[in-house]
Image (cartoon, rainbow, N blue to C red):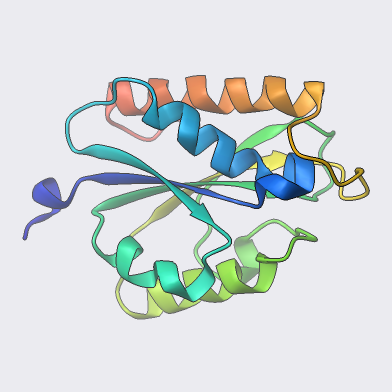
Length: 157
């Protein structure tokens, strides 16, 4: 199967039962509900960790969406191209180590570039289902930025 046949995978990560930490999954669901270009699929990766390796290896292009507990203001949407675990923004979530390790193994096995949309959350938020208003806005921004990136077919900063 060649790269064009494999297509683009948008993979949202997180746990919707932990409030804003589920923003990646929320973005993936919103994108799945929209008309996407041919060859693009959007998937809820939850907190899958290593179980997602095969799914990643089947895609020609990967866009990950995840929450981050970094130094940016809450609600910041940052587009990155992490190459190793050290390039992944810090998080305090249940899947943190799994995703970093997953990316390292993916790259060591010859996986291609991954684009990451990291959305800064407050790691000390109350645990509740649903997004806070500021992360709700950030989710909408991430959806629009990803749709724009897919429309031009090239990486945009």
